[in-house]
Length: 246
Image (tube, rainbow, N blue to C red; front, side, top):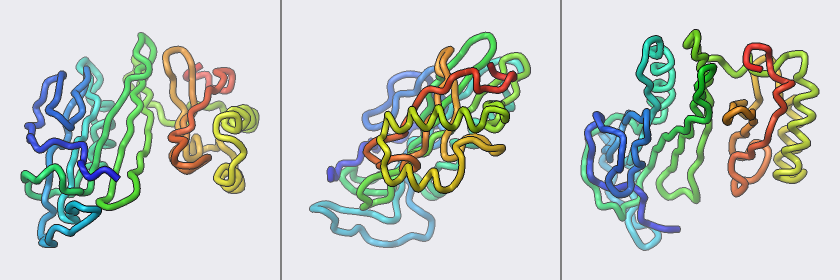
């Protein structure tokens, strides 16, 4: 395992403009806003640095690089608040902002986003929240999708995207695509034992989102396949979608 954590120690103020970031941080994309960035010492934590894998490990520090999407324009305040709240949930615990040797392994939190559709009808933001615990074999990421109606500025929730009349047919079609992507593995079999892919709550352990004019389904890590496979992502035919978004 590499000891060098991919976070720099140069601490930025949150009022950053889009553009290149210091080494180790994400560049701030168009529409990007910094929610939390830097290294934080947990309040009241006094554990000394530990020897780990030939280097040092700290259970008291957390390195953060939390970005959210923020859009200008009339009517976007609610959508911006929803997006920022999502990012804020992934912040490092509040503590003192400090400098720390970059070779020290710490907890890490990172949030990023991609605008997957932006036209006169819809704006869609796909977010990825990553967490790593110091000393762990690997981190974990969680994805969310936010579809914003350009006319009403309403954030459309996952349950309204797939037509309830097509839950079964859509599930079968997506399942076949998933099997082609990840194989008929044990995690997928366990997933299917727990219920259908689509139900009244939306997409189970997955998100439905547009990418341009196409629509896709992306699954959370470990839901339908091994970690190495990442977030299995497959297409979904628009005929299964609700009239609201079709």
